[in-house]
Image (cartoon, rainbow, N blue to C red; front, side, top):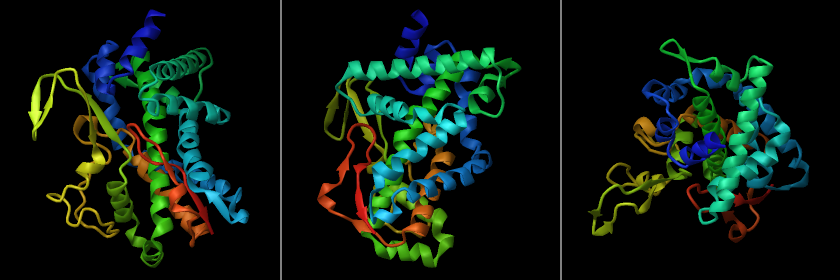
Length: 326
């Protein structure tokens, strides 16, 4: 129970801080950054992600109408990550409920704690099962067998990365996918531009991530300060929206315009520095494959009713209901 309480306390903090609270020394706390360099490693999930996207579209394409968020975007990251971790795909609904419990209930602390506890207990059980019944070819096993400076990484590190993958990699990515579909439903000229110029896909994905960055980072003020006339006291909780930074006119020309072939695009949709998103390469892959597959299968579509689209609040911004017709 003491260990569980410590994990709950730590996982309300940024990952680097959490790992230190859990007693992980600097090498363990910094090791997760290696995930950022795994561009070639995540490429092996592309075909499986494409197959998943096609199977989701198969379920509604004959209806001529679908919820681009609920029927499509929200299923992709959770299934991809479940496959990577080697956990049952049948738990998709539970995973989704836990992630929403953590991220979409800013004022309901009891639900957030329950969701966190469910995640911790689930991954503790997964680790224990692999200790008793060794497996191969899944990320949890790979993490458990990882070494830094000749020593096995601690179990707390394994749990921290699994938690990161689930909580930080699901809602954020499905929100990004949903936002790009919402945009494309209203911009046939951009759909045509991508059809006519497939070489634009890399820059197009970066531009859509810039404009529709889903994450707003939270921090706690550590000393009294005033910024641009706004006083902040030590202990205050502040939100720093990445989407606002991505529309800074001092950095981006015509920042409010979506320019799919934008050449200079140093956005911060994935953060920066030591807090840069560890799964950015996987997120890019999922967003690109999800959008490519949709446009291949459903090249022409539009919103059923723009006013009926609903959006999530809190630290992650993205459509939760986005009905389209085709």
